[in-house]
Length: 196
Image (cartoon, rainbow, N blue to C red; front, side, top):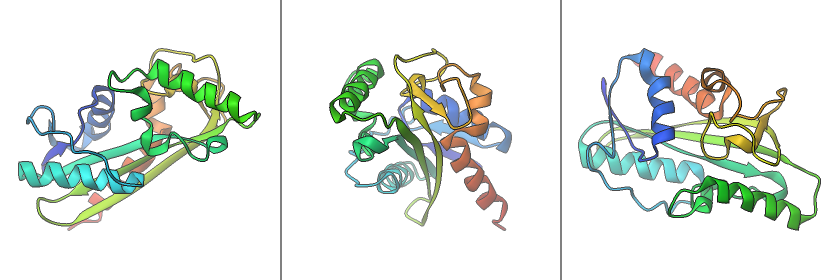
């Protein structure tokens, strides 16, 4: 399996996935490049949505597809925004507005608890075949106002455990080594290595 469709239309996510996959020698194509539509994310978990996206891209393209469903899960908000992380940013993908909403909801919850985690689930689907999933998490806390411009999404309000800088402030290469996506990719690569 050397051809792989990355089932995403999110440019920030695509860039990260391409960098993480670069050493593996895949011939990557994005769902957007192939003109594949974005399926509606109707699942109730990160796993559900990752599988849905990978399955749709693999079946439509006839090429194995890798999809990622990821998001921010805030303890004091009962895990929200969770699978709705991108939707909180609206049609225009305005993550500044989404971060403001997280801050507003935390204020409304009247809590000092800012603990949160980023979750990433990768799903690898064979065309009309089996699907495997790989989950990675990174735990930390939220800070306001947002800091840094190096990441994307909710990175400017997230500080991983043991760190002082947000994911928006640290060097992307450093983020790739510790992020939820990196942890999911470690499991994905280990599974590839165990295949005959």
